[in-house]
Amino acid sequence: MDITQSRAIVTGGASGLGAATAQGLVTAGATVTIFDQNASGAAYAAEIGAAFYEVDVTDEGSVAKALDKASNEMGGPNTVINCAGIATTEKTLGREGPHALDSFQRTIDINLVGSFNIARLAAAKMDQGSVIINTASIAAFDGQKGQAAYAASKAGIAGLSLPMARDLARNGIRVMAIAPGIFRTPMLEGLGQEVMDGLAADVTYPRRLGDPSEFAALARFIVECEYLNGTTIRLDGALRMP
Image 1 (cartoon, rainbow, N blue to C red):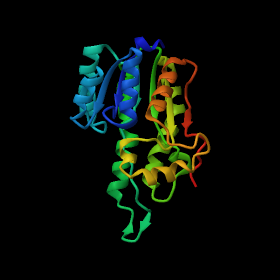
Image 2 (cartoon, rainbow, N blue to C red):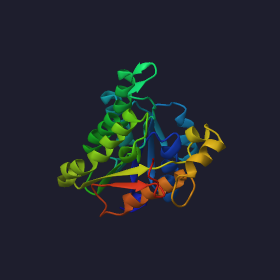
Image 3 (cartoon, one colour):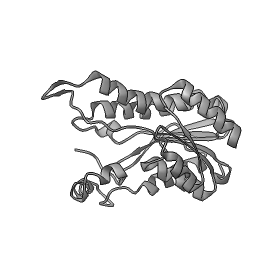
Image 4 (cartoon, helix red, strand yellow):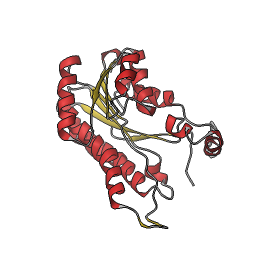
């Protein structure tokens, strides 16, 4: 797909990897609409030249309403990049007892169900040659202690790629996933430089944290490369979490 012909929806596009992706697409000439639950994202969208809708990705009505409005404004989407998600840390059995069921459910609902909800509803508005990119994580394959909920949600994203690509092949819609490693996002920066340096030391090469612009660059490449379909690409500097 010619990136200048991309009519993209980026969920979670007000911060982190989503914000970098939205900005990268706009800079490349795409038309971009940000879906984010944080209403303050409207200011960021205006700053980079994107449209914005406040959306709860887990709510069918919220997503359907926003998709209708976005389609009326920019035309039916031909690119969807799901970056909305949360990171949680809680052990299956901790000092205070078993993993809270509601926090496990919330993580699955936002990261996995939310991505599927966006994808299934957007697919109904997409033409042949469109693409859906979901965000997994290397935790899907190398989940660490305390990541049962997060890793399960991201493994679900990785597992979606092939069957969803097969489902949508008749419609000419590709489905891909990116599994990022440790990226320098505002959330990670809040942990401090010492913690970030320790995390970067485990990366094989280059021995540093990923830059969100590199995630955005891969997302753009997937949009442009029409033979990529039905798989998950690790973007992690060969990091394998211990």
